[in-house]
Image (cartoon, rainbow, N blue to C red):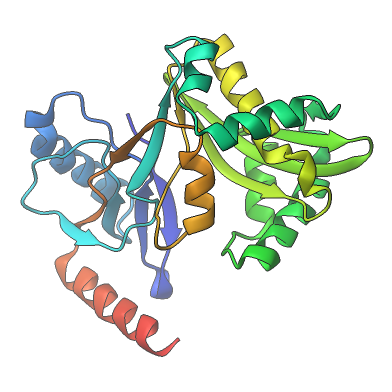
Length: 263
């Protein structure tokens, strides 16, 4: 199973990016599968020079070239198979306390895309405060409009305090992007938001809550927040390129290195 996204390059070339995939049930057939996929793309798009993949599991292919990770290779998976009491019990004591505190503050959950503009304003605020890199406003708007994600927001009266974009696939709910206000932080809205999302995912029959990336060095504060909810760390193989046109791919890699050095 895979999603392939066409990404344009200079001079009319392009490549296909497969985020968090492909998932290949038979690992031994991975080389055959990738070869078939590459042939299909060559036939359908003569300008494609490579495929970029983020396999779920280790796959066998002598043609893969390791590249810089796009999605975080290390994530945190929270099992939803246990009871709510058991899930709470594995959390850090401070996290449980903040959840209980937030539940007493009359916060309101709104799960609807109509508040996307307010959420995107809040995302910009979060970027400025925490020095995060984010996508363009149009990128997130497209995600919401196409229903690729659910927008969940937390309010105190008419004030938006926190929001997140949640993706659902297979047996897993994934926290994709989030934002929080600098106002009324004592209400612990982010804790309320994620506890609601975890409970809703469990009620809907999902088995895992994926926190979409942890890294103690790059994102110490965010990682500490996520780890407070418990769960188990999981490491994906990383990001790899599968060249389709060797000469053009070599030129691309040189161009990419120069761009990172000078821009």
